[in-house]
Amino acid sequence: MKFPILLLAAATLSFAQWGGWGNGGGGKSLNDYQKKSVSGREIHVYAPSGLKENSPLLISCHGMDQDPNYQQSNTHWETVADTAGFVVVYPRGGTGMSTWDIQGDKDTKWMLEIIDQMYTDYKIDKKRVYLSGFSMGGMFTYHSMSKIADKIAAFAPTSGTNVFGASKAMRPVPIIHPHGTNDDVLQYNQVEGFIKNYRDQFHCPSQAQEEKNYPNAENSGATMYTWGPCDKGVYIKHLKLPGRGHSPSHADVSDIWNFVKQWNVDGLISDKPEPESSSSEVASSSDVAKSSSSAAATGSSSGHHHWGGISSSTTALPVDPGLLAVSVYKSSDNYIVVAGAQGMTITVFNSLGSVVSMTRALGNQQKVYTGAKGMYIVKVGSRSFKFSL
Image (cartoon, rainbow, N blue to C red):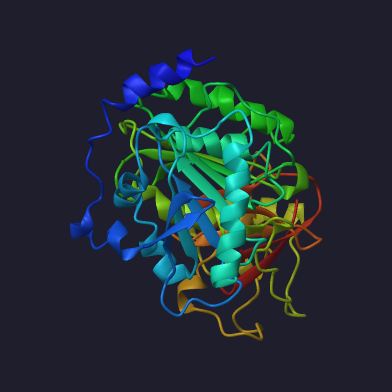
């Protein structure tokens, strides 16, 4: 079974010299990190100034025949950590050619030792540990789902479909997987089938929600695919990046962080919806059908008075004027659609208060959820809408 690794090593030599985001982009270098030893192996740690106890930890693993310096100089996780307040670790692969153990438990056990050391040093929140990796580091990220998923809250493999195939995850876990379509090492045509293994394991919906022209600083025309909710309420996301080859990128780290930060090992930790005003009306399907066409065309602020929004004249909490044009309706194919929320994050909660969908509106009308009949709450900024399917 060593043959695939040898092929990967040969391919890796062709891209290992590629440059990264660079210090000129405002990021730090690995010299700004603390070099530490855990069980005789090297890690590089970044802890923002003023870090609080019980902050999260993110571990970022490099590719084969690469090192922490290459991974850090391309991803610059510290730029996100400074704002969000979490610890970053870049570990060094310990086997020949800086590889990772993607079949056994040598390196997954070491990850647990790293987590324990970070708890000793920084009192991190052990329930909010996130694992990411590029190329073979991404393979290792997938492999870790079968070994230490009880210790890792969410996983972010990048360009890292495992050459040994998909493993059996210990539990349903949140996954986000960016991958370039021009990847000539771990080719893009492998991605759909590989991710499907986990979608099937977690009993995810067969149809993905697609967000086309998803904003990415490095690649235009990106698409974000989202499957969920799956078992235990987890989601699987895939970011398709047209034109990108085989390289880690700073352009992806914010999307990765914004996804993984929603989870701890017990499940989703997103905020619950705000209490509804007693004067808020609840939409019925017939109300929506009468009003949807005009609202979709105009995104007018008056629509929410008739089908599910909180009227600005009766809402107890102040409403951002930029949210007054937001309205909600049902499409002909049974989706909840939000109008007038371009660029905003939209969260849909079910009647139990659990998040069933979270997305960013890319246009004036954004499909956000379709599912079982029942009552839902659609939250956009400080506004909440009751809605029934």
